[in-house]
Length: 418
Image (cartoon, rainbow, N blue to C red; front, side, top):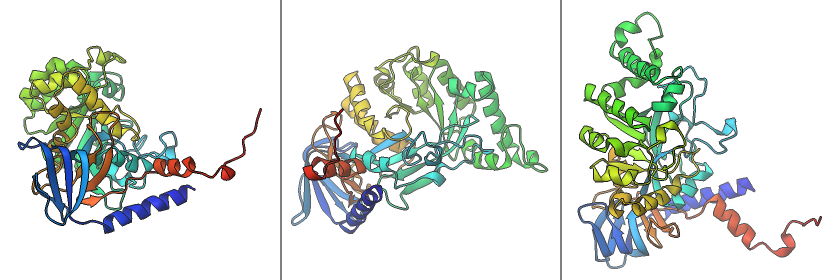
């Protein structure tokens, strides 16, 4: 049965590609993510994979899609979707290098599987792009994250080695012998390994912290050519990262977590360090979250910090819940525009995804048509376009639902009474 369902999904994906054609997407409310603002009875025209126009007129004779809301394709700003099918089964989980001798050199894109069932589920939630991060194994250096689309097709990785992922704070301390000073010593030692690469690795393969291969992989990040995504939650950990950025102004740094970010919001804004937060995180489940609050995202946004929103850390199956998280952020003081930006324009800006996260002429044709407000849990997409291609609105779950909801009674399995 699984093979039959996968074959059905694959056939639907191929059919969607073949059906690509010019389309006018009409929404009672069109949120553009640009200076054009929110349009009433707006029209987004897509042709040849790009947005041609955003206005109020429909070209004659063009196919149309009608919806209550229209937004840019949403971007999952932190996930492991596509790296795992069954998180508890090691052979189906490529999120972490575990005991691998390599750390910073691990390229998570090597494990990406576009056939993972969570891809279609995420797409049905309105997400057209993924920011996929590896999980830390034996070191604070988890490896290289990547960007992908949710088409489920071969070649759907948009950019490999898009960022280096480093775990600091409480978790980083655990991975570094038990203390935060140990984690910072490891980070600074790794920077020295890269900066003195020629002399350090001339006669052997080991640096103070990194192997030769890991140091080579970490070079773009140290040079400021690659984004460094650092996990941290406590205010003092965030202050340490801010200080590190000031010591190394050429670095490109973003922070994932930042549960106590509101306490240092002005410093983050001044340092131009964007954050990716889980707006659901409001309970002190660890000592790094004692000041967590549902107003964290709102306070960060009000201070001028670039804020993206992700769903709670998981094995990759719950990325679609980021809309619910953003809705709760809006209910706790974040403006609606800021909450929608946190799902679209903010992650596009943080990860350099040019032409994505906005509805504007020339932008890539990632567009989602909704049956209601995207920040309401009862709303869902009625159509999803990736690079102008209408995507199949099916997943393994919907196929199973349809199969068994209409199954003939005579074909139902026997029930055995007690």
